[in-house]
Image 1 (cartoon, one colour):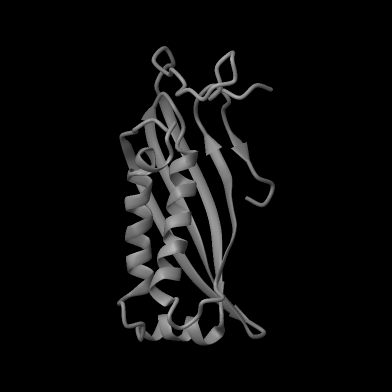
Image 2: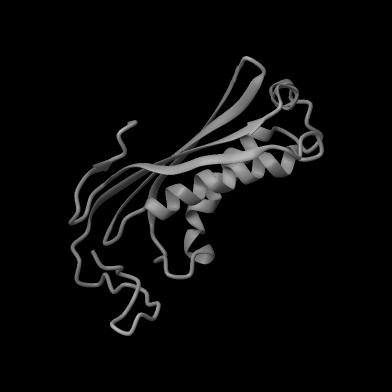
Amino acid sequence: MSLTHLDEQGRARMVDVGAKPDSERVAVARGRITMQPETLALIQAGAVKKGDVLTVAQIAGIQAAKRTHDLIPLCHPLLLTHVAVELKPGEEEGKAWIDIEAVVRTTGKTGVEMEALTAVSVAALTVYDMCKAADRAMRLTDVRLVHKSGGKSGEWNLEER
């Protein structure tokens, strides 16, 4: 296995995808932000002073997917055809969290895995930013790619999917 973002001398490079055929590309990423149950209660009650946490985080995730190439130096700018970010609160036995899932699609020469992962990460960071006054111990966890399809390598699924 070789790393495509390195040239023969081991220097970083942007991969030339010009000769690759277009195909439909899909990526799904997931992650979680854990928090105190009281913090989740504030979010669900709409009592966070900065506003509607779940909606702002959703929009931030969508925006982040669209701007991934500005954040990660060797990513190609892509024309995304679909970005969906969903946040689902959960709580049990004194533990609380918000699960985040991003689905990103395009038709093009390169995949959208980084866009999906960036969407999840920025959505979680937005929750943290909006709620940090109430709970600085929140943790961003388990950010991972769970599905990708399209291109030469075809379909890939993490076992959990």
